[in-house]
Image (cartoon, rainbow, N blue to C red; front, side, top):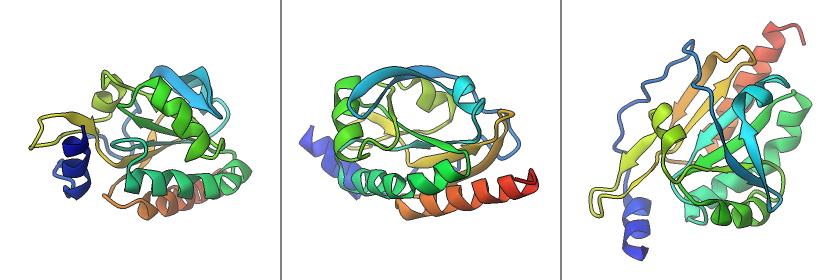
Length: 180
């Protein structure tokens, strides 16, 4: 497992640009998630009833960039909440890992979903294969989804910061366009 993680951390993303584009309908999903160390069922449809959703995929909980990204999203949660937006991170980790990651690295501020079978990852064209080990993981891609289920934005970047900055800007523009 250490070799897989090391290979994953040294890779520059080799996935092609995400197949889903702004204006496309976001695939609906429900998956097991954790927030604050507690399990629950996350439904995209239900989350969209409350406002825009920032859905971000990341390769592996407790790895360096994934941890930084979780910290940055946690720090920005007050801004997202003030604009009526919610955030969920999704990786191929199992729910036991997500339970711990949600408390330690997401700081109890937002949920992380467990997608060990990569069903949601594949639906969003967010999978990549580590050439050395042949293992499949979620690529670092973020989507901002409007309450009508349409994708507003897609960012594929191996760093963490662009995802948070873009999502905040897109949600702000969406709110302004709605007269909010």
